[in-house]
Length: 370
Ligand code: UD1
Image (tube, rainbow, N blue to C red; front, side, top):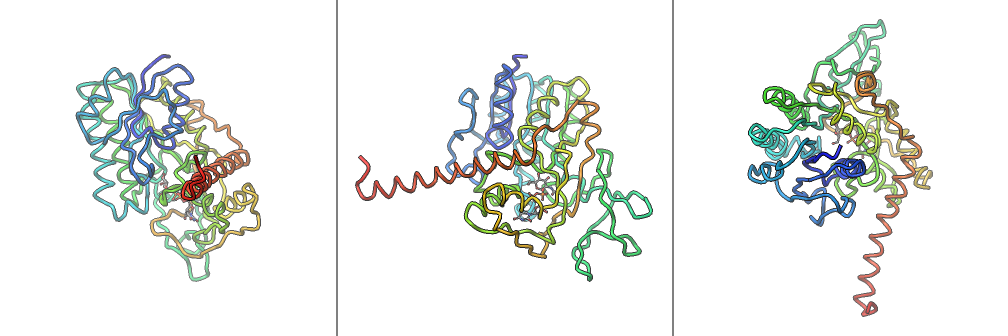
């Protein structure tokens, strides 16, 4: 080992966990990150970024900075991106600029300063709705959800009005890009695979499902649902659940995702490939809301079922992990219950810290801190 890895966007949730895993096995880690306010409210170096990481603060679209960041680097993990699906639908210019142009700038510099391998974070969002099967066994690649039906149900239906059944979605499913975010992730994935091949580098894309774990940006309203639920429960409020709560997701722990990146960086057979990365366990959003409230000691906070859909949401997309398992040897290890308990503990500590600061200010105002 002992390689130098550049992680773009590496001061974020996934990057910090990955940086620690890389350092632990003896690699050197450099991070290029603009510390955007939506994710890093104080714009300071995050305490959870390992002190051994070399941090360059700046924009992925700054070609001179990217050039500097690539000096002496063996491999790149490209995580720098704007990450809110809903937000991408109105902040079109910003999302396209950071996600699409940012990746183009990175590769423009890589052409003259090639590395051994580039691994990019792609997303399950590029599938749109996942793969479905009709009740008579036909596979459907291009399901478009219609929202709530007259009978009050939400699952997509076939021509005869029978509900379609979600089935595991393999990497071979057709893409259905339904948001500016998904378009950007697809561009990032294709630029990586096309240009690494063209210029004698290796490339790999991980299509990530819903990631959770300690360190997720609690203050970012566009963050993942478990962080949003955690903030609400911590404030004594019920989780607000869209639709009927029966939409299915696969929640994968950030530690498992970090391990998947290590495999994608190292494995001989990863070059030129895309892999689904998830946990392999599917749950409804209502189920996770209940489990999370219980894990935070507030089982009384029943999920509030809104019966309203969030614009652009996918009903179901469940992963087929066969390729990641057979080619990379990837298998998620984190037990979901233990993962929720760990998240609950972390959230409680965040609150405690907040209160400590508030309490300290109160004391200072009264002249009680010397
Ligand atoms: C989306 C993207 C994914 C991206 C992730 C993070 C799709 C298919 N997937 O996942 O690629 O990486 O965002 O930006 O677009 N929910 C509630 N209440 C809330 C918040 C969310 O019920 O307060 C529900 C949503 O309606 C959804 C589920 O929880 O059904 C998960 O939402 P979220 O965590 O935002 O992620 P996705 O939309 O699945």
